Length: 237
Ligand code: URA
Image (cartoon, rainbow, N blue to C red; front, side, top):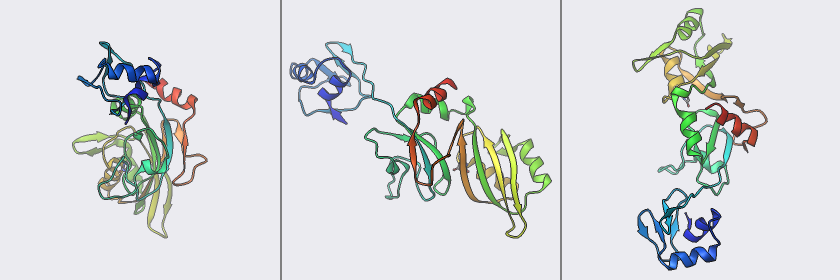
């Protein structure tokens, strides 16, 4: 929330002083209501009309790539007071995660205040590939690989991974490490797919999101995306 005169001035419509004048004269309407007090606070996505014309408010967009640790919630706020992914990034903007990773899942998560790009990146029809590395209980067999590659029916819909590779089968500790590429965004999709062939997921890490990966980051660290990366994400549209 920002003072109304600040929002108006930030668009370049007029100076803050002039905006105060307009407010006091009753020329500014926010979400259908005339505002005449100077302390009034509004949002950048509120509908602001001045002298009968809609003001094009545009908040500056920010884009971050976070290496999410485990025991962190993929949302903006948690009622139970647990740490959330936005706590890692000291941004003044109202950023939020692009999709979700489970509480115990680690890895690459994008955060932004760009709603258009978020909608595009999270819509399953746009086929954005995410690669996960899963440590699962049990030894992966040839038959398991075959089943996964053929596709697994989850809640009545078949999911075929875009990529699949066994990284390691560990006989000593009786577990396996597998890579799985998915374009879906359904909740717990990777865990459900592997559970369906009797391999409980022990740990899960998202290694990549489209062309982005975790290179150079440790758990809990983040970096802003470069302009080039943002443009490349947009070019996937
Ligand atoms: N699939 C899962 O099961 N969990 C995640 O966090 C992401 C994908």
